[in-house]
Image 1 (tube, one colour):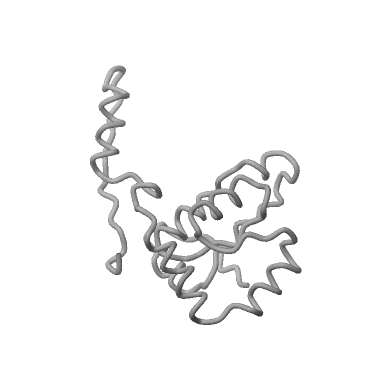
Image 2: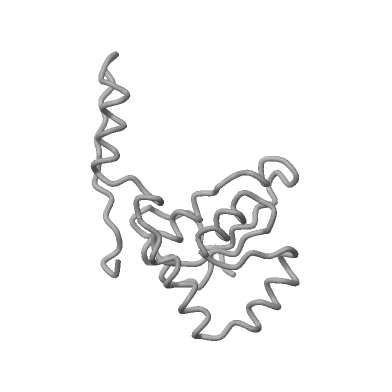
Length: 140
């Protein structure tokens, strides 16, 4: 585990390309918001085919389990150590493939979805929106 400070969105492909898992267990507001939040890192990591580690019983754990997008643990320390110790390269490639197979429209807005939201919001009151095209990684 390493912390390298702030990052720019343009660095996400490199960052997620350098890690095997996204730690998606949240203790910031344990027993409250942490149980039902869906953090950006599951969408970002999944967009770049990186599996998550999530806690069973939380909303993110349910999302990861439903999508087959990583490891779901009861005890974030003991279960993670046990699961990672038993994980084979073949098992990891299967997890990575499941994450890769998630439709990117479930992870990020494409240009058409962005335009539809802007149209639904309207342009009244001087609101102006710019829909930058979201591009999937070249490997997708």
